Image (tube, rainbow, N blue to C red):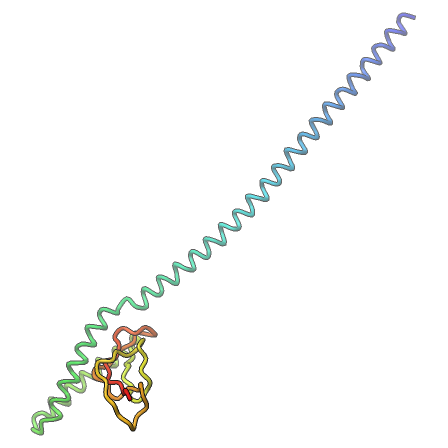
Length: 184
């Protein structure tokens, strides 16, 4: 009988050990599941951060591209302002020759007019346009009032005369027009 009792004891011990192993195994599985869930959550969080950083980088690149395009668009502004001074001088020379009636001046006037037209065409090709309208309302973003006159026949605040032309490079005013404004 002792053998039977020993056998039962051994079987009981084996059952207890197996139960303990199952409990430990369940605890380990539970811990593993918790670690796995934590890691999956961390992966999702990192994916979300990565997508945010990618979008942020794309927006940064777009802003920089626009900034560089703007810089390139107006890069020639200083050169154009210098050319405009030459255009002004050509206009003055043409006006003074027109006032003199000598025949030799006709050939000089023709040559100067050709150079003047070529300069204006070149400026237009690079996006430069004149600001020189008479009879339009004064706009401080485009005009600089250098004189004021009163003319009852014209509306108040309108341009009476353009003293020196203004210029725009694309949409940007690079030199405002110097104008005489009507003030009633």
